[in-house]
Length: 239
Image (cartoon, rainbow, N blue to C red; front, side):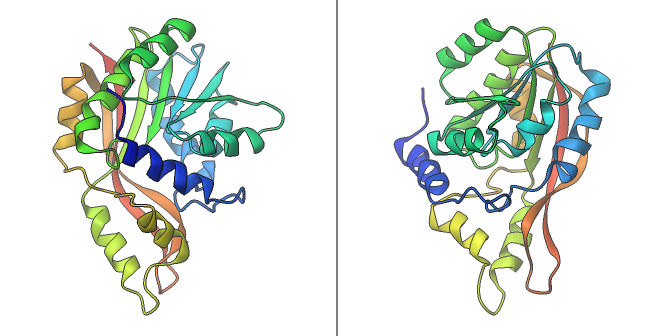
């Protein structure tokens, strides 16, 4: 089906306006706060001889860490500008990066045919996708896993909206990183609590483990506290 032109342009515009500086994107936290703890939850369930695909990889910060755990790591993102950031940040080609629209079922199937069953890492993609695109994003995870892969998926919960609202209500309004998210028309935390598990189940994914967590951001509240957005994580298999 493909994402809407407006959605594609919002992300292309965001990444085109983002510098190569680490942490410039509000969600670009270091792997020690993201892929490191997340992989500890995934690995007990996963075949680490399979490759890993980082869905919505952005500038590839987490992809490069995942490349140290799996024989091959591929980061994919809707935005060509994001992929350019990722390649520029990885001159040693620790991982590979390519543009992929997760709602393009044919392109997702072609990727699976090329690399075979793979593990998947996906952090905060469903919640900010257009509502009509979310089932296709969940289906993409299932397609890539095949029979042998396992996925780690973390998604913001609606409670994140309250945190973002507090962050935007400081005396100077939202900080510059959060302001850029809103300026480009991106809508974080717009999925309901029930929606994500329902989407995963409808895609044929089985929850092997799950829990509550936060996704640390690279910006702070007016009182200096780091913005940590409430989230829920799932370890998934097909069938």
